Image (cartoon, rainbow, N blue to C red; front, side, top):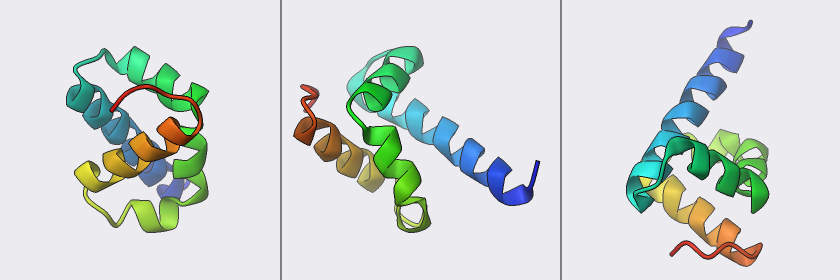
Length: 74
């Protein structure tokens, strides 16, 4: 596995964990929510920019993306 792939995977795991912590849900629920409401899709499309932001800022962005796609977490 290439170094860049490991970095993306590591950052994604950390981000899902932070998202779960922010909303007080289990990491499995956070993953399912982000996948269902296109948060992960958005993250992977815009990884180049989002990984330079803080986890808190990225959680805010993904929250808005999910809201725009039918999610209910605020």
